[in-house]
Image 1 (cartoon, helix red, strand yellow):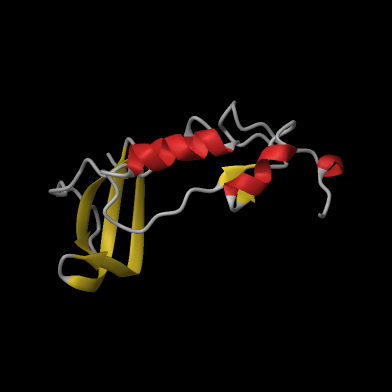
Image 2: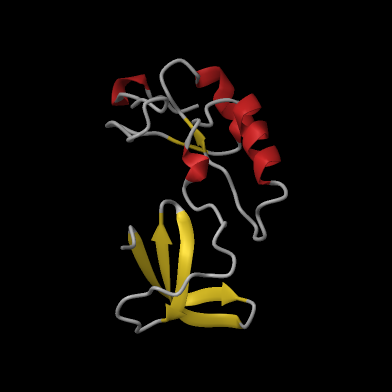
Length: 123
């Protein structure tokens, strides 16, 4: 049973841009089938492609961003970007992250706690 199925009209493959159904299990792409496939089951030949493993640890400073860049360096075969995280107490780190996101509620990742609205300010 798959955890998630994406149906996309623009999937880039070795065959070019195509309509496909992409199956994800345990954070890995495990199936790529025709767009209208009812239940994708065919394992992908590149099933070690990580899709969710970059969530933890949270990227809340420049050092963590560099660790993620280095870990993806020989595993990513597409252009990717890593968003940093605005969390309580890391205001001085945000400029070095090139872009960041924040959550107002629990993110699902304990090391990425919410940043209450009252702590936000424009610079």
